[in-house]
Image (cartoon, rainbow, N blue to C red; front, side):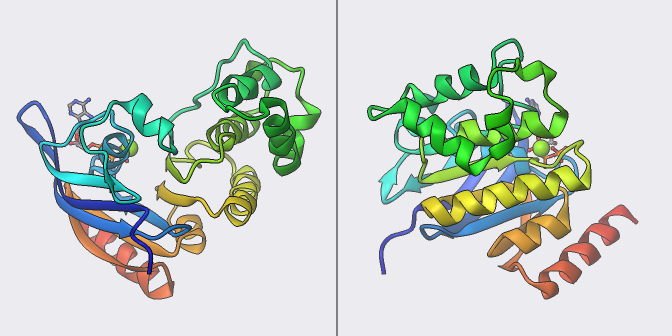
Amino acid sequence: MSEAMIEVKNLTLKYGDALAVEDVSFSLAKGECLTILGANGAGKSSIGKSLAGLLPPSSGSISMAGDDITSLDPYLIAQRGLSYLPEGRAIFPTLTVEENLMLGARKLAEDPKLAVQHAYELFGRLGERRKQQARTLSGGEQQMLAVAKALITEPDVLVVDELSLGLAPIVIADIYTALAAARVKNNVTIVLIEQYIDRALSFADRAMLMVHGHEVWNGPADSNADSIVRSFLSGEAA
Ligand SMILES: Nc1ncnc2c1ncn2[C@@H]1O[C@H](COP(=O)(O)OP(=O)(O)OP(=O)(O)O)[C@@H](O)[C@H]1O
Ligand SMILES: [Mg+2]
C-alpha cells in the first residue's frame, strides 16, 4: 500500500487562547473522500483552514503524500497540489467566467487554455456562459465556477467548505454531479465540509463527526453513519 495522501495527527487549533479543535486525527488514501460533519461552531472550517495553511496548528501535524506541510505558507501548500475552496464564492465577480478560469489556470506550466477547455467539458453550463461577468451568473453557477476554478490545476487534494450553502437542492445536485465526474477523471482526494448530511454521506467514502471541537465519531459513510450523525446532532440540539 502507498502512503496516505493526507495524514492529520493530533491536530489542535486555537484562535488566541480559544480552543477551536482538539486532538483530531485522520488519514486519507489517494482518491478517498472524507466528509467532516457537525453543527455550527463545531470546528469544521477551522480544520479546512489549517489544511490550507491559513490556520497554523497549536500542536499536531499535517502531512501530504508523506511530506510534512504543517508550517508551510498557503501558497506553498497550493503549489504542492492542495486546492482549497473556502466558504462563500471564491471568484472575481467583475471578471468573466473565462477570465476567472484563466486566473486559476495560468499557474499551470502546461497549456492553460487546454485546462479551461477541460473545465468546460466537465461544467458545460460554464462554457455557455464563458463571456459573461461572474456576477451575472446564478448563485449555483457561481459556485460551479468556484469549483471549476479550484479543480483547474488538477489538484491531488481538494478541501471544500460548505459547497451547498444557500443553494437550491437541484443546483446542489448539479454541482455534486460535476464534482463526481472530476473525481473519477482525476482521482482527487477530497475533504468535504458539509452541513447537508444526505448529500455529503452519499458522496463521501468516510465521515467524521465534530462536536464542540472534538471528533466524536468516524466511520464509513453509509446508512449507519446517517443514523449515528443524526442522533448525535439531535441530542446536541436538545
Ligand atoms: N476567526 C476566528 N476568531 C476567533 N474564533 C473563531 C474564528 N473562527 C472560528 N472561531 C471559533 O472557533 C470555533 C470553531 O469554528 P469553525 O468556524 O471552525 O466552526 P464550523 O464547524 O465551521 O461552524 P459553521 O458550521 O458555523 O461554519 C467556534 O467556536 C468559532 O466561534
Ligand atoms: Mg464553517
